[in-house]
Structures are given as structure tokens and as C-alpha cells.
Image (cartoon, rainbow, N blue to C red; front, side):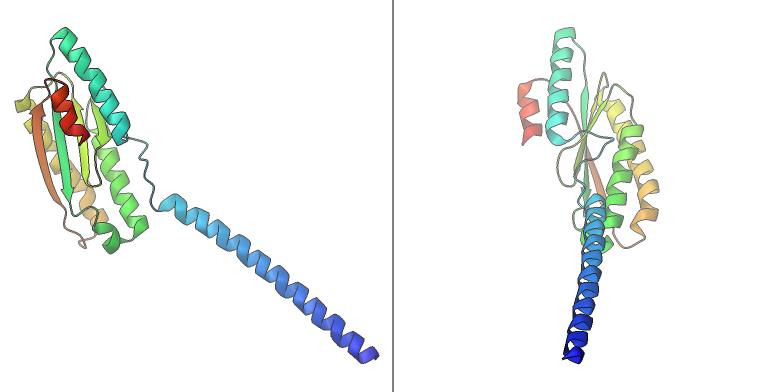
Amino acid sequence: MATDLNDTSQAFIALQQENQSLKNKVVELEAEIRRLHALAGNAELPSILSRPEFIREVARMMAHDQRYGATSTMLSLSFGGLDDSMKTLGAYDFDKVVTSLADTLAHSVRSCDIVGRTGIEDFGIFLTRCKESDAHIKAGLLIAKLKERLEPLLKGKVALSLRHAVRTLQDKADLEKIRR
């Protein structure tokens, strides 16, 4: 009888230890999940505006331009292959690429210009008081700078095609094209 009691208490102690070990493992896994969520799928880029914020600010600046007779230009950048690169690079490296791209765009324009993400692979820059000819020059400089910054991050695994379009926005119909 004493042996059965001793065996039962040892089994109980072993179960308590295993229970504590599993609780510790759960805490570790929850921390890892939080860390991975912070790294991957980070939809917000602090250095640039989201699509709704971007459209709101562009509409505000267009109203200002119409009121005071100024001309501003929209520079659209499209990064073909950006969405597919997540599969190739992995979430962590992909987020580094997108963050670097956003930071480069945000820090390569004037403080009065508006930078935002307009789609999965698309970014927009509203260049205030800028003619189309100057916007084309700015686009060339930006693309060169982006290629220089992104090449080391892409590690030769992904080839992005960078395309740009420039247009002067005149009225609300032009803004509706951006909204789509």
C-alpha cells in the first residue's frame, strides 16, 4: 500500500512538472507569435500615408491648387513583382524591402509633397507646385535611388520592374482615377 501511494505521488509530481513545462512552452510560443506578427504583414508604414489618408491629402491640396491657381503633379510608381517577392524572400526580408522603399520615397521628396501607398505594388507622390517635366526628372532620380537601396535587400533573388507615370491633376475627375 505504501508503495502504491509512493508511486502515485511520484506520478503526480511528474505530471505537475510536465504541466509547468507545457505552460512555459505556451508562454514562449505566444511571445514568438507576437514577435512574428510585429515583423510580418505590417500593413502600416509609418513614413508614408495609407491609401485613404493619401487620397484625402491629395484632395485637400488639389482644392488649394484650384483656389490659388497652382499646378501640382502626380507621380505614380509601380513595382512589378513586389507582391510575389514575399514568397521568395520571406516575410521578414519582404518587410525590410517595403519599409526601405517607403522610407526612401518619404525622405527623397520635399516636406510639402505627399507620399502614400496606393495599391499592393503601387505608390503615389503628389508633387506640389511641380510641372510634369520636373516630375519626370524627379521620377528618374527616385528610381535610380530606389534601385540602389533595394538591390542589397533583394539579394539577387527577386527582379522588380519599376514603372512610373506622371500627370497633372486638374479636377475631381482626375482624383477619381486615383481612387480606383
